[in-house]
Image 1 (cartoon, rainbow, N blue to C red):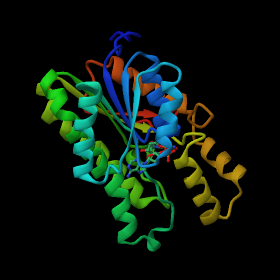
Image 2 (cartoon, helix red, strand yellow):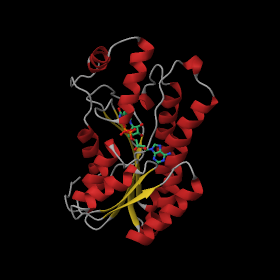
Image 3 (cartoon, helix red, strand yellow):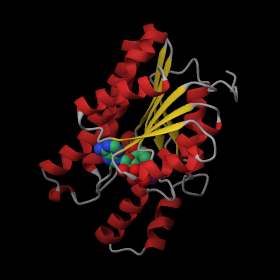
Length: 262
Ligand SMILES: NC(=O)c1ccc[n+]([C@@H]2O[C@H](COP(=O)([O-])OP(=O)(O)OC[C@H]3O[C@@H](n4cnc5c(N)ncnc54)[C@H](O)[C@@H]3O)[C@@H](O)[C@H]2O)c1
């Protein structure tokens, strides 16, 4: 497999959850690689995040969108095609986490975890497929988690939803291989300087009555490479799967420093 640094030049890449953290990192990397980037987020901050990149001369456009609204998603993807052209890649980064004892979990929590992490990703794929089928080419990268491989205590609905993302990825990979569309999932470990980790660490601090330093130490101790994941570790892998990875589909790749090995 070759990793061509110019293989994304002029291609349209869509990133959800692009206002900040991992999603912003992926959008920036695509833009720096010469792609035309559509940045989606429910948070209007995405407008400013995109402007920062556009001011540097990159071709980026922002779209404020709740990915759980299927009709709005399909309309937005039509707009992206009208604005930038047919879509080559979709990085489904947007996600939400929840951390609480299982006995306190109600319907609303399950609902939110599945609506955003599973349904939202699926709707965006439906939005991107017409372009990819037409071109008989495309890359889709879904975001699962280490918790989607081995479930995490105090995160039952999140773990269940991220597990569903992996199996959804496999089913889609089978269904759309005939159009040469490669569909994979990424399973990051605990990633520094992100909203998910801020939320999870706050949850563990409260639920386990531990201070932040002890929480970080406990998690790092289980990572063979001895540190938490950096945003750049995840961004680099997403870039590989987008710009190369031509013989990979239906996989769920761990980016966990060895914390997860299956
Ligand atoms: N950070 C980690 O430790 C970690 C570990 C494993 C997996 N992940 C997964 O990686 C992805 C990114 O995580 P992160 O920590 O960068 O998240 P984050 O919370 O920092 O950013 C997620 C973005 O998604 C957006 N978003 C949420 N709901 C949305 C909706 N309905 N419509 C559109 N946008 C919406 C948010 O506004 C936010 O900008 C998520 O799918 C997460 O589950 C993260």
